Image 1 (cartoon, rainbow, N blue to C red):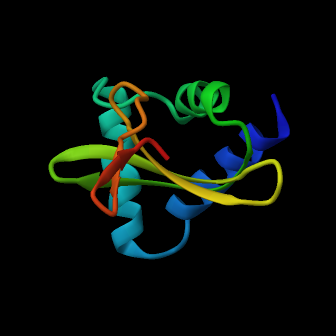
Image 2: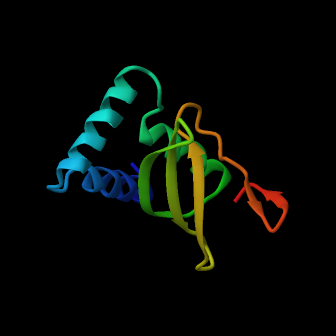
Length: 106
């Protein structure tokens, strides 16, 4: 397993295993969504994102955004830039964002 993938998995699961009751509920909902086939496993999403946007995973969050599950992934790109991607957890597609009126993928 590549180092960036292992780091991403650690960050993802650490976020859901802290002691807060709300986060435990979030973890349960995320697990249920995975088991129900509503979201892809994080490993699958990181592999897909890594093919198109190489970098070291710094942080991953799974959240609900406008009724859908979204992985928010922060990557440290070669050259030192930090990129935040929103990825549809259902299919692993990067969600384009608006940037000053222009659509961009990253």
